[in-house]
Each structure stands twice: as C-alpha cells, then as structure tokens.
Length: 219
Image 1: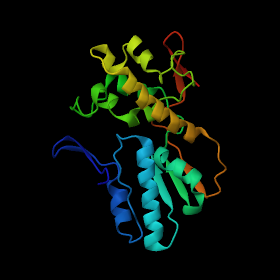
Image 2: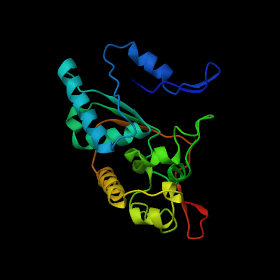
Image 3: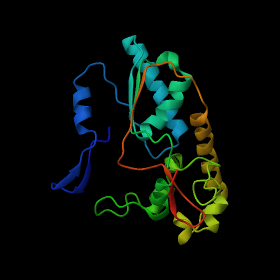
Image 4: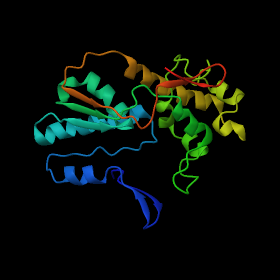
C-alpha cells in the first residue's frame, strides 16, 4: 500500500509523511493511488504507472490529474512527456530533477532510520536499482571529476560495499547502464503543454558538488 508511516520507536515515535493526504484523497471516489516498489528499476515502475493511467481513463472516461512527490515525480515524468494526451494536469512536489551528490552519501555510507542501521544500510541501498536514479547524471562531473556510472570506479575507490566486499562488475555495470538510459529520457527536452505546478522545497540542498580537493562547492 501507500507509504504512510515509519515507526522509529514502537508506540512512541512515528513518522507519517503521507497519512493526512492519503486519508483526504481516499474520501474521493475519483482518487487513485499509484503503488510501486521504490527499490525497483525506474523504467519498470514507469511502465506500471502508464498502465494505471490507462485503467483510470477506461474506468472514468477522463484524463487524470497527477500529484507526484519526490522519486514519484521521476517515475511519472517520462510518461507525462511522451503521453501528454492522456494527462490533464500535473503537480510535482519536491522532485529531485537535478539529483545531488548528497544521495551518494547514502549508498556509500548507509542511512540510519531511527535506531535501525540495517533498513537503509549501504548493502541494502547498493542492491536497489532505484538508488542510482538519484545520483548525478553521467558526465555531470559532480564528484571530483569521478564518473559514478562506471562500475570500475566504484571498485577502484572502494565505494559502498567495495569497502569490505566485492560484487560482479559486469552485472553492476548493467544496472548503471539501464538507469543511465532512463536519465537520458529525463534529460531530453520536451515542450509539455499540460498545466504544470512545481512545488520546491529547501530542506535538502542538491545544488552542490564535490571538487577535486574533496570539498563541497555550491553549483
């Protein structure tokens, strides 16, 4: 189902990012939720979103308006670009269209959720194809001149799981290549004629890079 809460300490501390909006939208007979596995390849989830849009049109006879948040915006955007005739309006909320190097810290070091060190450990994130969707795009030169879409670079620099283990570089490169192809679709300019609202946030700065000295610079 929809991601409504994270329990940090059972019965004491919970994070409920989508609880209110999901409850509000659930009161409408015309609301549909797009459930997807956020860990999966973005092109797989994009295809599933397209199938949902076709279902909505068939069941309601109307083109849907879309509200997309965070990674969800990256999933739906290529569909909006290529199937504008199937969409009414679009709202993008906090979508990382310009992914930052900060996301690399997560897959490189892991990200603790409350007291849980394993849920988003570097090993877990490394295994999720969607992790690489949030990295700076190929040839963007955002990490000290290092190309993060080259599997050999990860091994040579002992990034992420390569600090203390190993993996099949051919398979890993195939993952990077597939996500890179999706990046190309995202980056291809298209004149979108649908009414579109983009809501920006300031809680996580993506507009910086790592220079040759390993220091952070604003872009």
